[in-house]
Image (cartoon, rainbow, N blue to C red):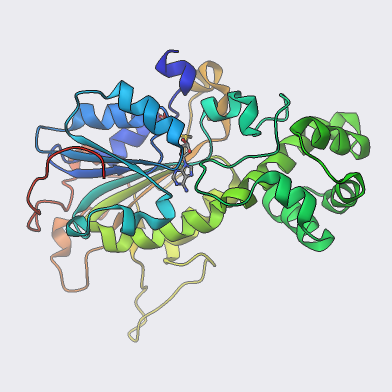
Amino acid sequence: MTHATYHKPVLLNEAIRYLATDPDGIYVDCTLGGGGHSARILQKLSGLGRLFAVDQDENALSYAAGRFEGESRITFIRGNFGYLDVLLPRELHGFVTGILLDLGVSSHQIDEPERGFSFQQVGPLDMRMGSLQGKTAAEVVNEYEYESLRDLLFKYGEERQSARIARAIIQARPLNTTGELREVIASVVPERFRNKSLARIFQALRIEVNSELHMLERVLKKSQMLLCDGGRVVVITYHSLEDRICKNYFRYGNFEGRPVKDFYGNDIRPMTQLNKKVVSASESEISDNPRARSAKLRAAFKNPARGADADNYPGSGSQPASEIKSGFGKQQRPGKKKGGSV
Ligand SMILES: C[S@@+](CC[C@H](N)C(=O)[O-])C[C@H]1O[C@@H](n2cnc3c(N)ncnc32)[C@H](O)[C@@H]1O
């Protein structure tokens, strides 16, 4: 298998341009997958730079361990990025230069029928990204009450036929395979809308099984204690629910999109978004990799604490990443540690 068959990285140049500003920096790739973004981060690092590569999928970690064999600057971590503060060594808290999140599932995960992510192949209704999760899609489909099932299909899949589909699922219980679920959906959705509905329902179940939106909110909040001042978060999202979470957090510091002011009427915002407009894939990338069509990239830096020397930090969204010195280096870096697994 080639790296591109495992997973073709999306918005690779754009993500690295925003993320990798300091060759000696400490970076975290929260979504290692096939290691496409990690490989490019490593290219940008000096001998002093370090990369922590996280994934909750054992398969991704073992694939990447082979890909990066002999590379001492990378440390692999198995776990959910929602617990990034616990996964990263404590002495790095406050010293991280950049965090990358390339959300969702890899092509390899979709292509393996036994993972249950694809409605185009028959497999068990699993959809867990890693074996650390307790709940499978079969449990959601077979055990949730009508209201909960309907609401999650509506909320996470933005599926207008959620009530009809939830009723049909409940009548057809028990469902054990993606093929059975597909048939149930096909029985209530007209053919011309079918593929879109299938995609929406499978997306909704995957989000529920993996608590995807909750974990995204957690890691964004945790990034505050992990990043150095001026440190960056780059997020590539694949649907509007994820993008809205990032947009609100970068703009307002909360997920409701509510401006918060201090006593003097100044905005309180932990982060500043670097790109004024969301970054999307070019036509040529989309024709080469259709998965890139829905990708949206947002990059933000951590605002320095009040009273810090604000002139030393990037302040303008139009400033290219290459011209902005990361905040790392203005604080004392913890001792360099040897590579290996945590
Ligand atoms: C889109 S792929 C990343 C692809 C990668 N950037 C590359 O270039 O190959 C997303 C990866 O993130 C992992 N993932 C998704 N959510 C996660 C979470 N909450 N914690 C840890 N890993 C997660 C998935 O298992 C998958 O391997």
